[in-house]
Image (cartoon, rainbow, N blue to C red):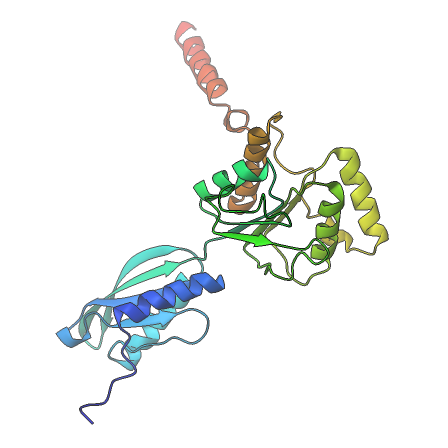
Length: 284
């Protein structure tokens, strides 16, 4: 019937809602849009991918199949590409845009290190969640940059918090006991965070690891814990410690080695050696 709504067509508003919903679920999403077509009625149509089967029709079954292939490939990384396809003697141009989920920085503990770490985390692109059992610290006044603030019970710290594969967990509570309780419970969950770091001196971390092994924690999972947390930059002040922690998290996210670039690249040594070789050759 002419009055029926064609459910195969996806509006721009629906495409935007698809991306936002995927972000909330922590999933990647792709929107494929027809930007040029043999017939004007096909321009502006969308095909959506992410969290299941493709949704939306672009105008031809063969085009839908090709668009779905492009969308599946684009799910792997954030990018935007314009593709030109020749189908049945006609040219179609598809704009394929993928969005990756924004990773979460989960800071357990709302003390003096957590405050600058929250600011830095938000600055470098994380959705920051701060959790503590003290409302006088875990509040919007202390953490204006946090997307979410959670009041938790350290007896069951992860009842209100979902740990996902893109969650970066930092344990900086007000006491070593609470750090231990949190890591002990977290290591027993099926969830595998992208990063798990715990603050503490070498002596305290060693004692915690020994106790966790005695409790039956998986040695392979324990070996992946970053403790003592952070890169060695000689940090002392809370802001410096937060910077060291953030640097290690970025290195874990991006695959960086965490060393000094000047040591790795040795640019000056290369320049000096080349000049020496050139000078030696000229004088011989």
